[in-house]
Image 1: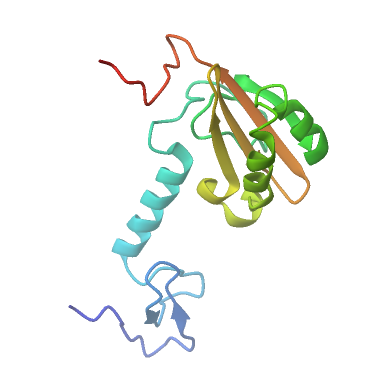
Image 2: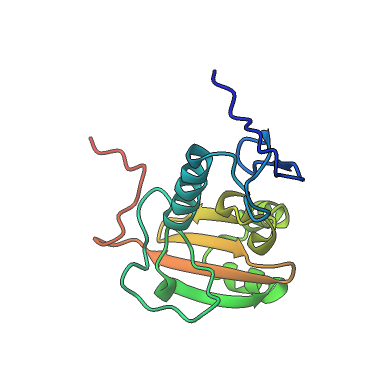
Length: 162
């Protein structure tokens, strides 16, 4: 493997690349990547995080500034945004009493998306007979609850088609 560490005699500082964690001597104080490949990798990671795996569900929709949208469910399916106790109460309208304690345990483990910027550790999806639900922890105190009714636009996954 070719060594990506380059030396610039005029550089008086050493940095670590935020992608590959290689130590490098940057040409400028503002550099955060050791090479163009790491810069491209960062762009791809941001794009995947922004669009998810199924494309942007809010494509073409103008969202208010500061909105942190779901990666799977359109923002128009948002049914609650606020504090946890009220969100759990709203969730109880969609989930059976038997399943609610289990979902609550999963919700308690969510990390804030504003801290992690990782949708996978900041949200959970719940599949019921009638709805696809998503709970997202926006910050330390606020949660979002999305509810999308199964229909022709949003077909149920995992169906046994025999």
